[in-house]
Length: 228
Image 1 (cartoon, rainbow, N blue to C red):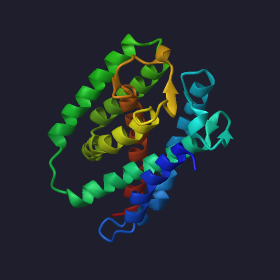
Image 2 (image 1 turned 180 degrees about the vertical axis):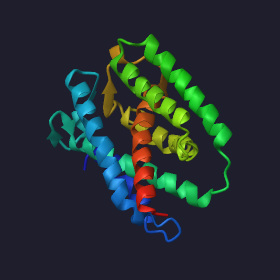
Image 3 (image 1 turned 45 degrees about the vertical axis):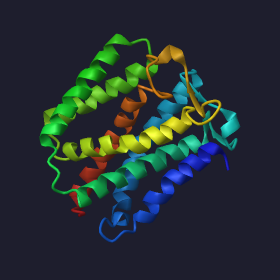
């Protein structure tokens, strides 16, 4: 198995096994979760394919199995299924095990910071495709959340901040923190150049803009089906 494949598999095993935990019982959410992931991951894969074609980012064949869908390795496609699964699993676990955490004030401040930072980065880097697109989406999503006062946004903020821990591990491995060369590389022409160890700063906004609409659709579908 390729190194990228091992990263995906090891990321998935824990959340999948724990999905059968009786307290969280995450398996009862699989239908709305699958719909949510597909609704968001398909457009993201189109975005991924387009940016791969024009060289905004790319993949090191030394760490891949060699199976491609278009210009995307199979491992990259699986990334958009596994990572959202794991993040939404964390989202539900946090709600079950930390129901009394008061997050309204923190989430509002968090939202304002994300809006301001993403707006500034997008406006100042219109020629950087990755910076501009990821930060613009983050700005739009967060603005909607604060304007519409989504009831789930405080839980989402908590989820996102907790997910930064596995995010730093997984994205760190993918961007070369433990390998001679990165599994996923980024063109310096389309990022600001600031990195968290080896992770482009823009990844913070990319992951935010991937997870946000998935949680949005997921929470909406749950409320319609009255799943608890």
